[in-house]
Amino acid sequence: MSVLLEVIATTVADARLAAHAGADRLELVTAMGEGGLTPSIGLIEAVVEAVSIPANVIVRPHSRSFVYHADDFAVMLRDVRAVKAAGANGVVIGMLNDAGEIERDQLARAIDAAEGLDITFHRAFDETLDQQKALDVLLGFDAVTNVLTSGAKASVLDAEPRIRELVRQASGSRCTVLAGAGLTVDAVAGLVSRTQVEAVHFGSGVRVDGNGLASVDAEKVARVKAWLNGVTPRD
Image 1 (cartoon, one colour):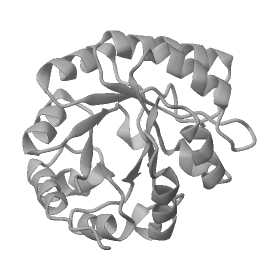
Image 2 (cartoon, helix red, strand yellow):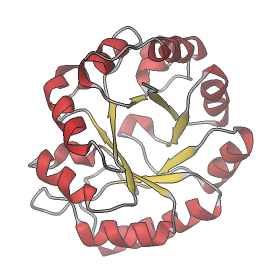
Image 3 (cartoon, rainbow, N blue to C red):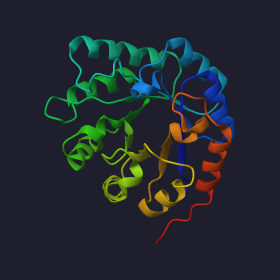
Image 4 (cartoon, one colour):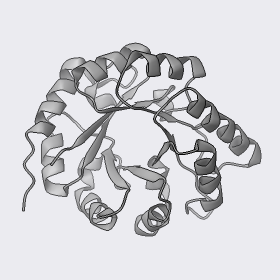
């Protein structure tokens, strides 16, 4: 089983370190301390030029909530188009309504604006009231290729049963469950083996001293990749 490793990058240096150490894909963000906000166009363009691995870019205008009103959403559509023009591989988005459900119309419009880019639905998914129902909604959009989730827990390591359920639900679809939040180098192989998840997402877990505001630690990225390459799924 090939397990994809996605690493958060907040600078060009992060992107280079992660790529050279074996990351398969980047999530490019700024303001990691706020959960990630839309980075500048200059940064997106520089990262796309600097590395050969795919870079997915978060489009999130603020950290107040995942419910976006008309002005916020208009900004998001502009940013999605700009990310496309900058040459990124995909966009990372998430939008909910006041009832804690996925905002289908906004998602559909963002997908249209992305014009074929990969779509990751981010951890707004973990704030939905019913994750099984929310995943069914996402599975109805062929453009959504990943859903980033901690299984609605602060750490994905505390949500293995839920992750197993979501992996099973998404089986056979174009959408991959991307497990993230609270992952550590030493715990990742066990999580993958027990849940059968096919992609993992690292932020603080592969940074210097585990500090989300520090730079990527290439040695940690390389260790995670080595663990993932050695994973043997259980029957």
